[in-house]
Length: 151
Image: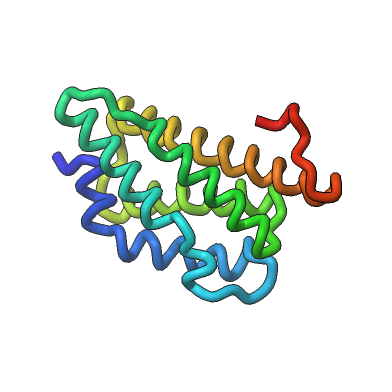
């Protein structure tokens, strides 16, 4: 049986193109270039696939590796005018695109471990993107000073 990592790797270009189209149409704050929107998403997908592969090989999936990508993504999205809702929704669109890819490849089921790793990767990336976006926003509102309570 084809694994989720296999499907994502084989369909990576289509997955990314579908996600990009959705973000451009529904989540971006006005017209944005592909490089602006792509940001850390290709690297995020590589890390998700790597986490899935590690689990397949019986190793710890190391889902924490997506956190710094989310952190950087939150900053970049702040700088190009996204709001928090847009950031969360674009990650949601990527998640949906992954499930659509699985469905198109004729698979109705994922292993629980695969779904769990996917969930952990997305939760970490979203949490870190939102945390850093919020820190940047607080810094802007506070006249350039970061609040010590943000982490």
